[in-house]
Image (cartoon, one colour):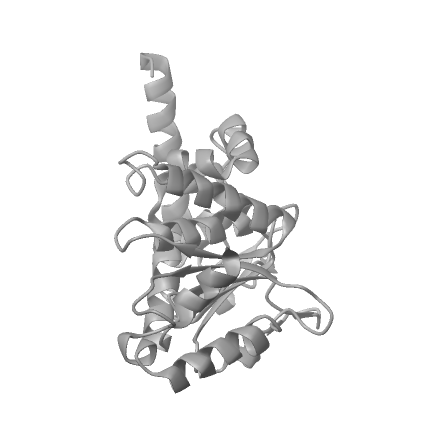
Length: 286
């Protein structure tokens, strides 16, 4: 980056900081959005999930890609854009969950998916997945620069969910929601991600209750689901608990999108013992 580019970049950041100060002084109205800093970068990453990972989350993916990683990236991109379901298995610590939640961010930012549902082995684990996504949307400076229509209103909340109900853009409510188990992205005219939804639940919790009624009265249901390691060590040792969780996935989870509508998604999983939920899911993949 040359001297002129660095100065322009610093000036862009100074202007964004000034806008934040002005907005806090004015109240809930966020005013005009900052311009997209690098439209070409944003457009290129919309065509390639791998490039999106490398560009916007370089710290998370800084060790290079293995063949397994590249295969998973290809499958994730396919399910997000074209539909389908698959189980994603790699050794613990290899980043399969990080890839899955990054795919959720990619899917929502570019409007490939309208409603992503994250399902954990427990409610607490599911909420941790959403917390990771919220952290990226709130703190990732590169996402703020290239997706200001999403990240600028989120930053304006300053982590205070109570501010969401009164937030406006051009005097119109943004409709943003920022809860521990549920997020609605800002409603901004012309934004591909306008009103996108992320919800979470535990595998044995209120799976069927995952839906959202928009201010216009439309009922949205999940169109992409991520059951992340939906078993515990205890459930993996129990044939009965394993059967129950498989039944929930085959019934409630795959039925989240509504009658007659096929849902897309990925299930990051780890085999704990032979015959457990992950082992059976992967056996069907073969």
